Amino acid sequence: MSLLSIDAADLDRWSTTHMAKADLPDLVRRLIWASCPDLVFVDVPGGEAIYLRGYDGIVEASMGNRFVPEGTSAWELSTESDVTGKANEDYNKRTNDPLNIDPVDTAFVFLTSRRWNQIREWIDAKSVGPWREVRAIDAGQLADWIDHVPWIADEFAYEVLRRPRTGICGLRRIWDNYRHVPIRHGTLSSDFIIANRTNTAREILPHTPEIKTT
Image 1 (spheres, rainbow, N blue to C red):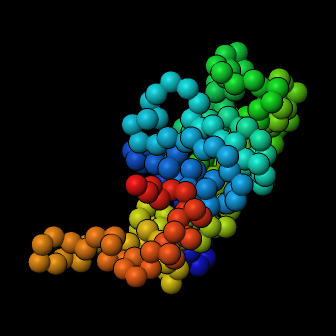
Image 2: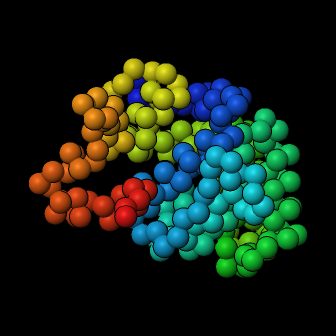
């Protein structure tokens, strides 16, 4: 296994940690942004927001892929060990009370960071329901998704799995290398990074939706 490769066993072990429940939405949101070029709307809150009422995520994509459905999709995320039990609980809850979502026009996605032997049987059983489409993503597919976005894989392997850095370098890693450099009156600001590169920054920012601008 290469330093970069992340497999289902890695994610399954991570799921037992205290931080996994709050960090999983952040990971999924970044993967969605990185792998879908035609996103209309993404709301997958992490951190303390996971305790708020409502779906774990709502996504609207003009063009989908094998991980993200085309159109509107409602997401439920889980790190719990009883995967089938949690999947049934979330599916039944959202089917009985879809809130402001119309299941006929919406795909339902259940994502778990655990390994799940019954995933295919579960999808087949739920696909006859009211939802436009039902998908499920388990640890194996999530690991494959992560490996398809090398800079996210590198950060996850280093920050979460504590593996050595690879040669791949994303924007977050570049900024981390600069922002901790001490200077006489504090630390370097982002103005240092984009000095004389304002036009280039304007061209890049539309393709990095996670970076907030003012």
